[in-house]
Image (cartoon, rainbow, N blue to C red):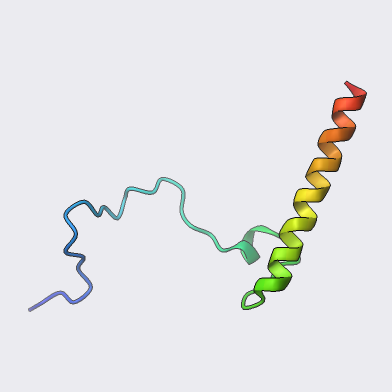
Length: 61
């Protein structure tokens, strides 16, 4: 029997990634599948909030 799902690349290892891949909608509240523009805006909003918090912490400390 021939395994059609087998990868012929000798350098490919299935266990090479230590952290499993999780899609953005599972990680960030507000992101949804099949909405790349909304997900980009949600990600930018989270980054903006992180920058604001970092700036506040820098001024306080």
